[in-house]
Length: 69
Image (tube, rainbow, N blue to C red):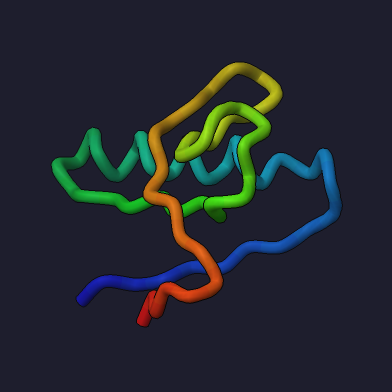
């Protein structure tokens, strides 16, 4: 069964880096991952998650009207 993990922390704590590293590790083992990002977040381009150290991945965007469950 799939699991949903929710991480929160202060800014500059490495959340995006940890997310992208975990996604990479799962994919290396042949598993699938989904990365979601708010539709209003366009800092690095809509539908993208990027870390300060340069890691990045495509993300599925969602808005306040979407039901994610």
